[in-house]
Image 1 (cartoon, rainbow, N blue to C red):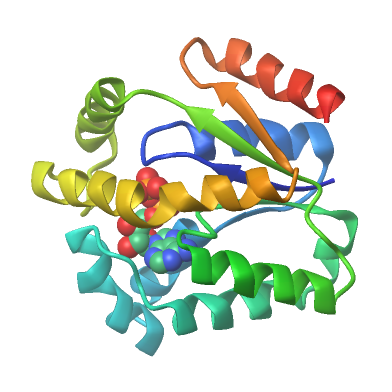
Image 2: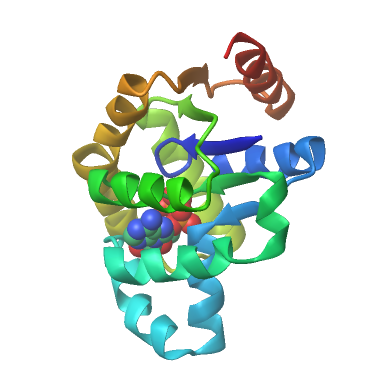
Length: 188
Ligand code: ADP
């Protein structure tokens, strides 16, 4: 199964991806996690990305595509994957399709986790206290939600037009949302 998770910051992509990874036995590729690992390692890429991420803005498409190509060149991707955090704009969506076509592994399904803005803000505020992420301060949270609305939301239409979109209600317990995602697989 080749799947991409779509949804705003705080919509639960990472949490559900962890569950799905166990269930599907395929790698979970989170571009946010890959970038945070680079920042932590202090690599040149990490140094470039650090401030941009802390502000809640998007790291450049070139950096992301390079990182993704690198990750997709590994053998474990042959069984399928769960992609989380990418694509975040229409250019990235097109670049991803080109990459997947090149390796003969087209996307099967895009799952959008739908959660309204007020709840997102509550969830992110809770996470800020629990995890202390550099971009969970109120100003960066506002910026990330705005970037999502402006640049990432159009990606939903991209997958809808391709006939690959499944919309899932992201409000409820972890188990409830997970069950809805599995039901969406059946429908697709
Ligand atoms: P969230 O979705 O909760 O905001 P992520 O962990 O997915 O968090 O991403 C954190 C940050 O990493 C983003 O705000 C952005 O700066 C950077 N980032 C992650 N994925 C991408 C991407 N595909 N394109 C550009 N920047 C990205």
